[in-house]
Amino acid sequence: MNPIDKLTEIFSRFPGIGPRQARRFVFFLLREGADSRAAIIRSIGELSSEIIQCEECMRFFSRQGTLIACSICSNIERDRTKLMIVSRDSDLDAVEKSGAFPGLYFVLGGSIPILEKKPERRIRKDALLSRIEKLAELREIILALNATADGENTEVYLRSLLDSNATERKIEISVLGRGLSSGLEIEYSDPDTLKNALKNRSH
Image 1 (cartoon, rainbow, N blue to C red):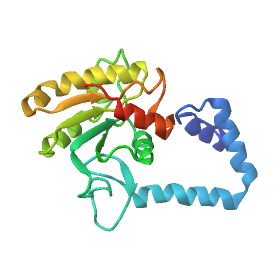
Image 2 (image 1 turned 90 degrees about the horizontal axis):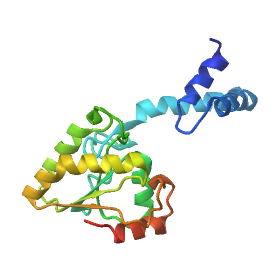
Image 3 (image 1 turned 60 degrees about the vertical axis):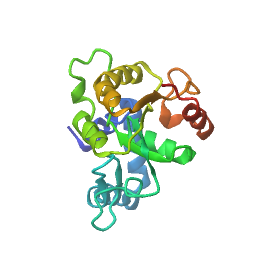
Image 4 (image 1 turned 90 degrees about the vertical axis):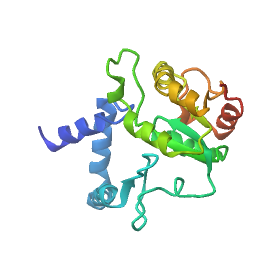
């Protein structure tokens, strides 16, 4: 396989990118010239050396000294009675930009397809349970998942996983209000829609 085909295959693995679009990316890079390609290579290298994963919420963040927790988790002013569970880092970013949520987060790392027989392989189940256990002040868990079939299936799984512990600790489990249209992904929601969805969340 030549370098063009190899890179096309790599780009094809990106979410929402098909083989034809992936190939256009490759030819764009070739037209851009050596300096642009070198800059991209450096940036990819910096992902490994400068970006780490928060040990609390599992989001990726820029390394700052010896910190192992991101700026959100280490901020003592955040509301530690509320934990929002999202599928991806991009969902967390979208909620943060809305400015509507003062609490903490956990990034699942994906969602659970309807026919998945081993759902624990699709999400960070053990890390989530550990995160919840450590939050002694926790009073509400917000399931902020996409308004899609996979998102709803993930919600059902999480409720079954968390219900007994939540009941024992008197923690409410809520979901975003349907300010989110059916089929809409949180990442692409505008700030006002997210604010309404948070304000109108149901228990």
